[in-house]
Image (cartoon, rainbow, N blue to C red; front, side, top):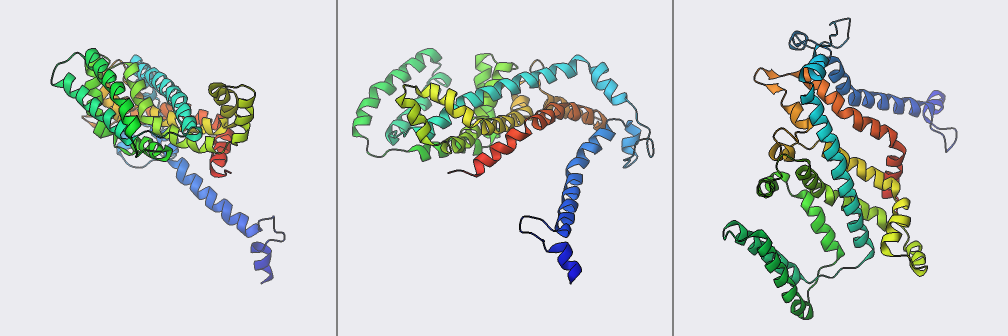
Amino acid sequence: MNAFKRWFVPARVDEMPAGGKAVAYLLLGFWSLVVLFPLYWMAITSFKLPVDVSTGPLYIPFVDFTPHLDAWHYIFVDLGPDTYRPYMNSLIVATCSTAAAIFLGSMAAYALARIQYRPPIAAVGLGIVLIALLIAAVAWGHVDLRIAFVVAFALFFLLLRPIMRRAHRRLNNDDILFWVVSQRILPPVVTVIPIYLIFRDAGLLDTHLALIITYATANLPIVVWLMFDFFEGVPREIEESAQIDGATRFSILFGIVLPLVSPGLVATGLLVLILSWNEYLFALFLTTANAQTMPLLVAAQNATRGPQWWNMSVLILIMILPVMLLTLTLQRFIVRGILVGAVKG
């Protein structure tokens, strides 16, 4: 009984008992092994020959197999530009789309957190109807897109005023936020064909711009959803004091509020960067060769002879390396961002 108390009953309230520490470290060690083993498996596979991969599980270099650099030589020398180009494409597209999504999503989230919107339901319905008519006129009526857009824009503003005067049922900020979040719930495969047709007609297929616009649009709801909570946690009195001193909305947002929520901004940006870096479906439909990204190059290693696990391991390792380094560098901001989002009020 005394031994049990010594190991599992704390001597002080603020101290974990020795037995509890041992169990906690054991569980953490086991979970670390579960998390890190796939990385170790890819690392050793990248140094194996095809015959070593096909003969069965081999885990210890220089013990049950001899490491070779054939896969690394193939990826960096034999493929050469076919490896560097997708890597640079992923870097450009992921960085630019993340910056665009964070910039636009932060402003939208701040507006929803601080400004009360009451758009009439009839006005929203009018906009949807005019957009549908615009698409029908361009697709089936072969009307010039610029002319159709100007006509639809003019009709919207001509009909908006009488609708605003007579409207009774209106939406609120919660409805708008739910609609924004629902755009991310929508499966991307539902929208990929229309997006492909739009960029084909615009002549932007297989370009960085098409991927940047698509990735930023797809990740914008996540930024709005997460940043809305961070902005809600900032006391309004700080902004009201700045407004009394003559500060504008933009100066308050970029000069006061964003620095206060910078941990949450960094955590959100890293999440969006990871999603953009790993995006496969949109890149598959919108690119062929020039703007091909790393996920497509990894998938291309599944050749007619079967998956080239050794080459895929090399590509995956160099693909996840920048994200891992960035995560380790920004770790303290990520932890603070999670805590800021979890403890509000």
